[in-house]
Length: 202
Image (cartoon, rainbow, N blue to C red; front, side):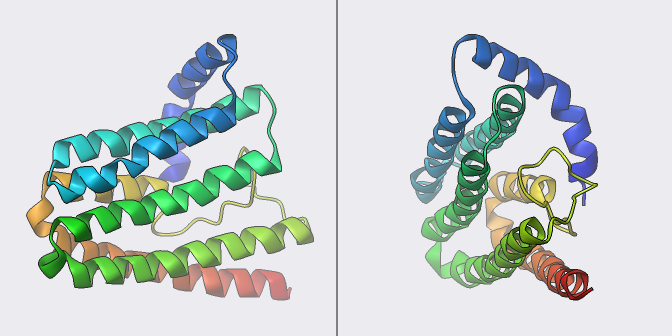
């Protein structure tokens, strides 16, 4: 829901960082993999209750995720790169939740499972529509810079980052926050399924 505004705000600084990496002969896929590796480091960090360090990993991962897209647009975009980017994004999102479950299985287990369940519906509806939109040549007018059809909703990238930040700042409230966000993600998944079906049925 907020991505259309946050992307405009961060576009300029991301482009500057991308220009710097381009001058040093780095490519978008390298940035994607490095950012993903940093993001996965959040799992053991969270398991040991190092929440500030986990937040650093999360912010760096999201920063790298923005840079790789900016770098791809000024070098060479590819379907392979877009595929790698979105798949690793969804793995990262689940990894953070898994880390919090490891941190406190007894208290975070149920809410963590509920959030992962909602992520599955959110992610599958998102990716499935992107595939069909590509085949049907449906244009994305909201996020034309994306390498695939970016089907929006109540919970997008910005909301996820805000939620993960709250998890790290208030880890004792993870169960409550996770259930709330799971509900929001479920509503988004329902919207995407209904919208996607109606759009493809036309």
